[in-house]
Length: 357
Ligand SMILES: Cc1cc2nc3c(=O)[nH]c(=O)nc-3n(C[C@H](O)[C@H](O)[C@H](O)COP(=O)(O)OP(=O)(O)OC[C@H]3O[C@@H](n4cnc5c(N)ncnc54)[C@H](O)[C@@H]3O)c2cc1C
Image (cartoon, rainbow, N blue to C red; front, side):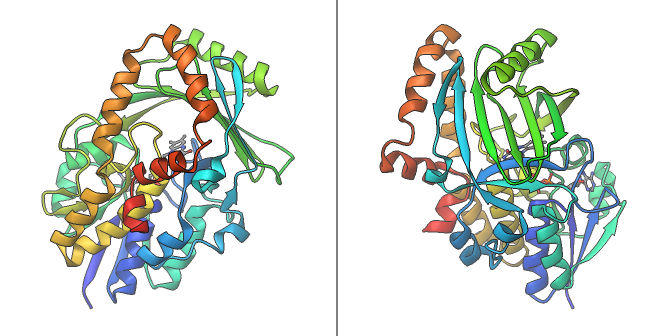
């Protein structure tokens, strides 16, 4: 039986492993942590992403519909934007978005995919970290590397990255039934910030591609308290690599290895829809094991909106906050008013073209 190695048991790695096992391969996944669900420093956590459940099933063979019943995926109940202090309701369901639990709990999407992988016969070796370029060289050709938003994977595969700066807060709440996302735009960040909740986990995150000072964090905290009455006790500071440092990113290959997920650059460069990108690119990586040319075509299609999104983001960053303060609420108030706008947003998302054509 042909053997395949996948590094990283996150979303992209699990989708790749399931597909390879279903092709009749003997698949082993090497994972740094001692269990599924990534790093305990920020998981379990709620995340949000557009997902075309039917399209993804057709494209990858993986049915995410039952995950709506395990709690791993939940239709948005409350979506809103707070732009320079103005609260605007936003219909996230117009772009088929879901709240998603990430991490090690049985209610997470990671656990959902892990169960499917185990059923397909995938083997897991936990506590196995890839740390250097020598480690990469020792892996067999066509190994899929999907180590996510972690510096080691980028350094070991020599994929160039920029550093992004993050403050994250997380707490458990009694209400396990409700979910929400509130996206904030304001003076405190050149990207965006948000609070969200699902399955009793409440979360807040502020980030940008330059250092975040304490006063910036204080301004965001104050906005959150004013708009939603939510206070978080502990905030942690993290740095993450962003694969936007080269025109050769996104990339599907690093030498004779195949990349997937964030490491492949499959995150949308404006809204960071990393989950959809990870799921779709996991499938593309599995295709690459059998047919590199076809996978390269699929990858190009899935990431074709990235360059224009990146330029649009750069241009919008040139506008001073005084201009953004007028434009942003206006844009958000009308963002999903017209079906055509929602369709355009869908088409611009990584993988959406792939899974709906
Ligand atoms: C705090 C936070 C909030 C986010 N919120 C959102 C959101 O709301 N919506 C969204 O779409 N995206 C969000 N993202 C991004 C999203 O989580 C990622 O884009 C997505 O998980 C990428 O999937 P992946 O498979 O590439 O990596 P992951 O799912 O992160 O999986 C990587 C796996 O590789 C393992 N690993 C790491 N390094 C090594 C190594 N050296 N050797 C072996 N194994 C290793 C990790 O432990 C992990 O299991 C968020 C990210 C963070 C950190």
